[in-house]
Length: 144
Image 1 (tube, rainbow, N blue to C red):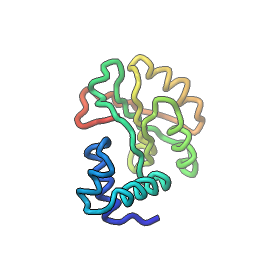
Image 2: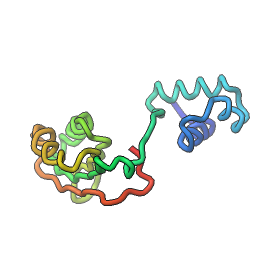
Image 3: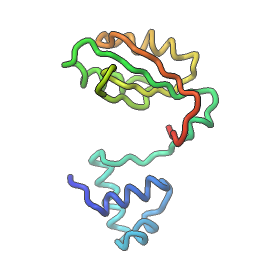
Image 4: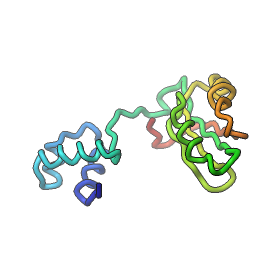
């Protein structure tokens, strides 16, 4: 599926306000409501778009955004390891990156639960050989 300017404008409208109606989007873009509805359906079915509710991470005081830099034992296992990490509970995202680490992992959990996550969940993946933890102190425009 190729996305065009109308698709990008629909995504932009939803990014600004996920509760905006299809009629409002259609009016802004000068297209029909059916066009918007069908395009949103195609975008979601093809994994270009996911519409969901997000919370301001600073407002959930008992949890914290934590980033982990992780090294993987064998480079050929990067994708398999990243996919396995992304399926772990509390993981918001996993990215294969360049530089000092192979993966950057974002988790959202209680700070006291970090040791359990590291020693149980992440340690069960044999391909992770080391990690470094970065606990956020304050987040700006960070929605989870």
